[in-house]
Length: 297
Image (cartoon, rainbow, N blue to C red; front, side, top):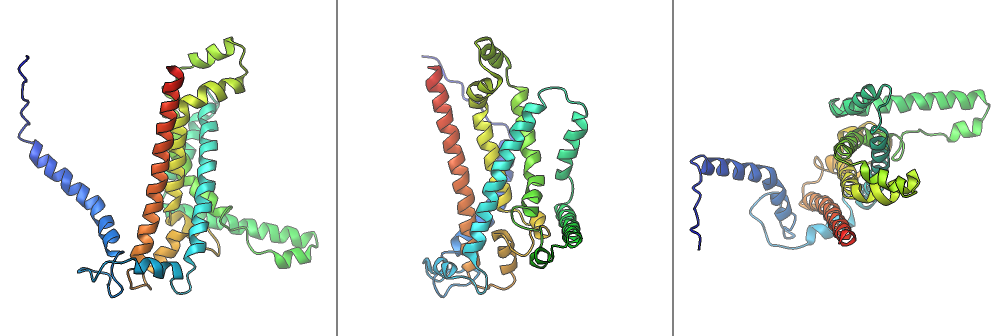
């Protein structure tokens, strides 16, 4: 029986462990406090000590908070998040495939795409809002020139959930998706696709049956990034969404008017949705991994 050599931790281990624990507490402590306070009793307030434990404030949230339609805002955010997720996945995969070959001006195009990450979000939002207002003016001039008075009277604005807001969110999610695809394809062995072509597969069959199953976990991860980044985005949405609000914008507005734990219940609800999306993503990645092992076995 071999003697086990006990490794001694260096003197710096415990100070660094304490710093790490404090960092984790700083990051997640506020979230847990909000979770706890959202379960206050009917007489509870916004601070400790808690006065009972109940689901009272979640019921109040379901009834609505003043003039704010939480349900409608929730569905708007979900719809926008799903649209952003799909667009981010499709465009990131296509861009990743395109950048596998040398493109004329490819470096410039890459820097243009990634530049939106270093621009202040509120400036991006203001620019997109101004752009769509200019589009509105152009459409109104065109309708007037064409003599379409009825259409001109009924025309509102091109600013909206699936126009300007979608574009604003994509300026945030697409660079992340593109960077992930670059990392994936840099490690991707093209010999797999070459073998498929040697066996008579078309380029589409090689992608669908060889490349896509191999990059599928990363594609699922891009989808998660797309949804979660869109789900809680405020700054890029604020000036580019038009006359409706997403759930984060409604939540921001409620912080100055709602003085009950209902706002904590709303924060808990939005966080649970985020965790649910991450859980579904991890489950899909796990299932894809098992499927790949089953095929290779």
